[in-house]
Image 1: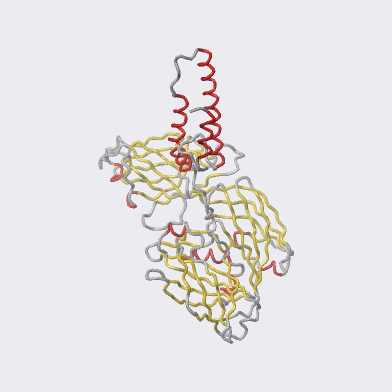
Image 2: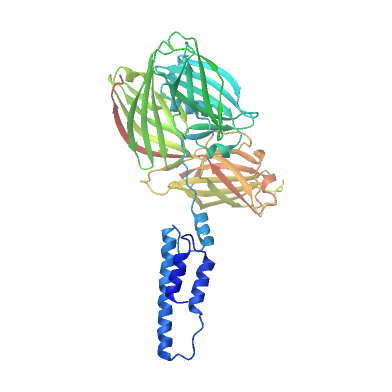
Length: 515
């Protein structure tokens, strides 16, 4: 087949994908056609040149078709699938969703999401509803409470959690829509319904509670639309894990508070060496006033302490620590009613965070432990660096073996004097299994077989100072590990978690009176 005939054949083919086996047959027919041996060498060379030219033209033609059809001409189907499969999954920002460990986490989410809610609850303006409706055979909707504020209805509700993965794969889980308000003349009006964010909610899953918590804000056309009504009738739909469920007519109690509550956004912020501190908003009502803030820090995920001073117009200085009424994860609330009547100055100078992911790891050789009741204690003193966290060396100072087990002594040493962060470790708390602990510096241990120490294997810690001649050295912390856990083992590793990390900084901010 010559080039002209091949071009005609290609033109007669449908303009669809040319399969790899078709390409192979075409090129094979060109490169392996029988050659007339009687032709002279000149014609042989001429034919070969024509054949190669045709092959190049055909190759470019095929590549052009594939590019036109959106394909990659240099990979087979299996290659393309491998490339697609190797692409990293899209990272979804679930930063506004929280995984609750207690109902306190749920309340904190609501209060940080809805401006003024804390004050409304303190003034008893939030209406308890506690209604329950089936969404299917397994899932119920719980309408928990509502806050009627100005032209808004903040509706707080929850639904049974069927599967954690379904929630994280469906942004609209639990979202309310098509909220119809039934008017007194039997007509209906559709109200605007918003969730604070499509990524916003709480997943609470433990042995007693397995729910998804959300809040929706319904906007009235007129703030007086519910004036004089003791209840409203509504119909709305909800996303039930990718399925739409429409609720029948529901009656909700209506109650507005007598005290005015307002919020203003501050947007004051400061970047330190390791953290970003934001004063976000000021809520006020009656004789109450609260500053809401948050901290994002490389030092940890949960606020331990925030220090500084509030200075009033009359010169009074109030420690910020005395006015912080709530520390929850990376959020804080400062009570300061004075902002309703005057401007104030705030000076922040120290922040400590709780690091919940990193640990101090201390490997200990216990292979020579004999555990004799009658043996004298064997003490080894040393100064061996075993770990480094946040500008701080962890030093193993002593090992004391006796008939009760092992006592370990450690100390800390700052790497340099101008470091911006510092590990704070003044106590060590034995780990308590099956129990949430808010303590700092929790100690646990595993042996060389991967077995974890039980609660009774970890002994209480002590704090004292090492002496060297007439001079006092660094403070030393000791903790004990019982004989039953170390006996017959080669090595154990102690882990200390929930570390306190602090930094010093200076931030002076003037906050004007909030009207």
